[in-house]
Length: 131
Image (cartoon, one colour):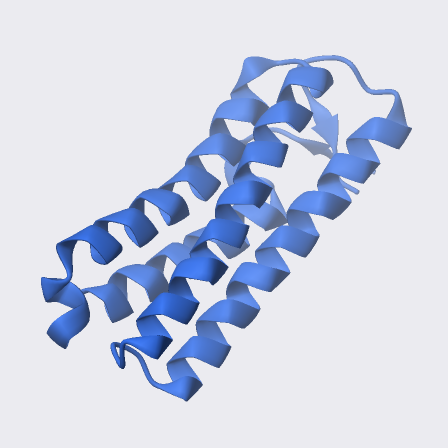
């Protein structure tokens, strides 16, 4: 298996980036953009996902990386919860909700899979192998 050299190579990070683009797009329009509390909170949550994956990778140890991945996974769940609020307030359509929620769910699954891989791999060092 190939060794991951940069956090940008991590599939979960790539999916989190896609999710962040979608969240920024939908939260930047109409009434959603004017609900500063929800807009800012969902953006902070999506930022947390992509940032924690990157920061954990750069820390250099698999145990610490797993801890950061757990935070990223929790933030993806937070994005899902906030999407329900946006839907209930009429800020996003059912189609937007389903699409973005699927991205968040997929991100959680990728993060979980990577956490499980690290746990089972016995890897401890600076570089990690792709699952």
